[in-house]
Image 1: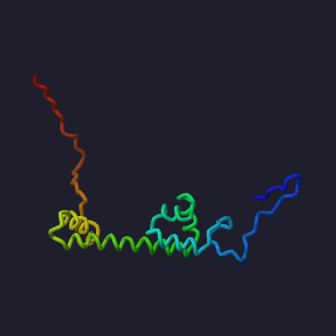
Image 2: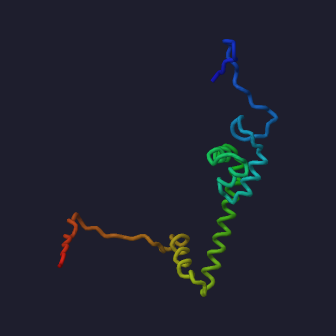
Image 3: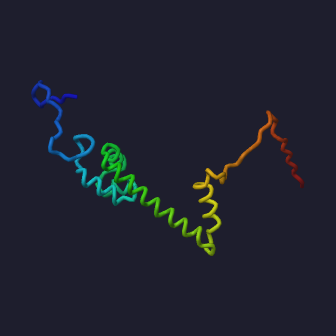
Amino acid sequence: MMKKNRGTNTPKPPPRPSEKSETCARPRMRVSVERLVECCRRSNGIISAVAMMLGVDWHTADKYIKNCPEAQDAFQSARESILDVAESKLIQIVNNSQHPRNFEAIQFLLSTVAKKRGYTTKVEQEHSGIKAPPALNIVIEK
């Protein structure tokens, strides 16, 4: 889109990105690749954390990350690292039979990680044709 100069009828060309600029995404982005990647690494895979470190809103940080392959890699790596930490904590609880949440941790681990082995919390219902719902009788006694 061409902008007009004030007081003249000649259109002003859009600004061209600097060839020396080391920024990701669009030319308007004012964050260097290095700064964005560093914020992604320190964020634990949380976009809100990246946004706070950069001083932008969540949607802007999300666009920056999506438009910069280096930032995407750093962000995904940070997210995988924090998931590894969470999984190791879960496994510590599973291995500690005295932990008060041991049974729930085992159930969760089996229903998520061991789905391929048939462990699931899915409720299965058998349906054999169309039947009317059972009648509901309400009796009020005085």
